[in-house]
Image (tube, rainbow, N blue to C red; front, side, top):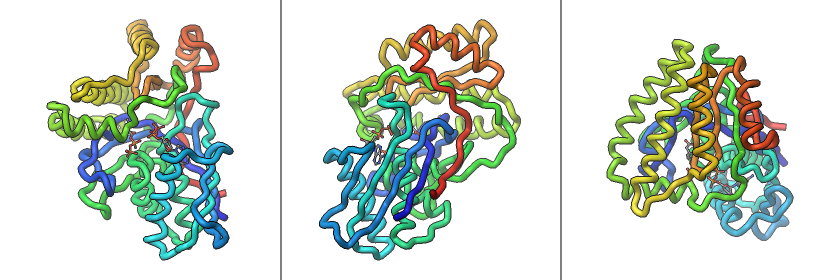
Length: 321
Ligand code: ADP
Ligand code: DP6
């Protein structure tokens, strides 16, 4: 049995759209920060006594769709490794209970690491990133710690994540506001497919992400937090504009999301520098520096309750236990 731990990541330049849905090759690159507070621990054991793959997530037998997704992924591992046995998978998401932060990113990064090793493959991190990508695109970035870029590539061999090795912006913090704990009505997978096929702005998104990526990388290089935060916030809003311009249109925000966004802007105008980013759900992540964490957590604790406010810092890459 092999056990692996992967931390989740928050995209600052978002991945939103696949050019190849089977291999999960994206239209654009993306860039993320791995977070220390949220992670998945997964054990895999290939066992000749099993009639089918067995999957438990958070001590419960996986629901049909989740089982299928893990099974499909194990099929890829069996095909690549030559292993033919069924597997027992035991996985736990270490996030505050039902906080709406469970992520396919940490889940499939941990599964890729544990399953490939249990199947006798000895993959390096680049190969692991390519494999994790097949489970969920954002998972390819969770193989690495800190700032990570997913280089889009054009095929299975050259689409993988690379760590950005930098001493800069190391005092960055992400204050996660866990506004909503329910599962989102439209998965990222379905949402991005709808945007690719129906939003008239999709071709513009592809162009703009290229320049957003260049700008954020140069902001990191120059240790320029203001530019870093500004581009992150803009890129997130550009992604959400794709949901509003899809047919049918959809929106991941709720009323509390808007309250949080307004509060971030108010704080910023009052001299507390912070920016928001939002993934495919209503929860808001506030990007800031250590010096402002206290003021920001106090403000949002008053607004949503202290149990909804979690402070994260840069987290590590994949680990085996
Ligand atoms: P998120 O924004 O949280 O990544 P997704 O809709 O992309 O949301 O992914 C959630 C899906 O990921 C779940 O429905 C489930 O199929 C899968 N998943 C979540 N946690 C695990 C886990 N620990 N092991 C395997 N699959 C998981
Ligand atoms: C908004 O990686 O969950 O979080 O590849 O279909 O599994 P699939 O999608 P997923 O999408 C993540 C979307 C996002 C942006 C990001 O993480 O880059």
